[in-house]
Each structure stands twice: as structure tokens, then as C-alpha cells.
Image 1 (cartoon, rainbow, N blue to C red):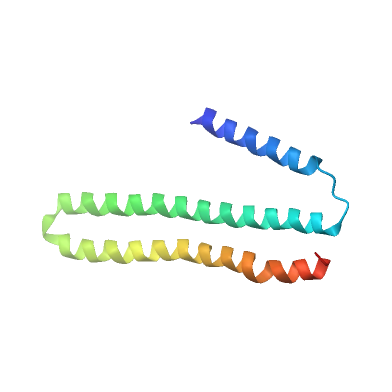
Image 2 (tube, helix red, strand yellow):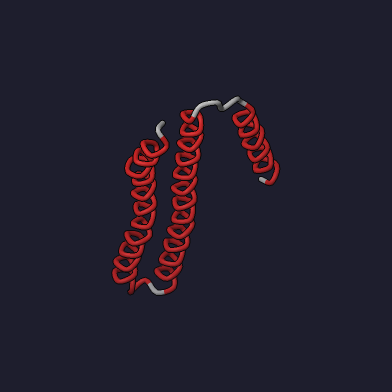
Length: 117
């Protein structure tokens, strides 16, 4: 796992170095670089939120299964509570997705118009 992560970071850093090595003589190039950074930040934000919510959902389901296995008479109450908790966890991922769409489609065009790109 560490090897795959280190290779991914290495490829990301070399790709960024090649992108910054290109000449940027106009403001449009600066605007396109900013566009790339905003899109990268939005993608990473949604990815981190989704992975965190996936881990949270796994813990929630594991706890509910253990609770039902220990006390089968409470399966109805535990199932309802688990589904409610899963809905709240999923809402956090949707908030991150909405925020990334807001960054890309609402804030980015106004900044691009501001710099004249």
C-alpha cells in the first residue's frame, strides 16, 4: 500500500513539474492553471469525503450487525437507527459534492472574468 501511494505521489509531482515548466506568457495560461487547481481541489475534496463516509458506513453496519447478533430481539430498533445514521453519513458526502460543484461552476467563472481570461 505504501509503495502504491508513493508511486502515485511521485507521478503527481512529476506531472505538476511538467505542467509548470511550460511557458505562461499570457493571463489565459494563469487562468487555466487556476482552473486546474480548482478542479483538482474539488475532486480531492469529494474523494476524501467519500472515503471518510465509506469508513463511517462500514463502522455503522458492523456495529449494528454485532448488536443484532448479541441481542436479536432489538433488530428492528437497531435497523431503523442504522438506516437513519447511514442517511446522515451519506448527506455529508452530498454536501461535499455540492460544495465542489459550487466551486467549479459558480465561483470559478467570476474569478476568470476578473483576471480577464
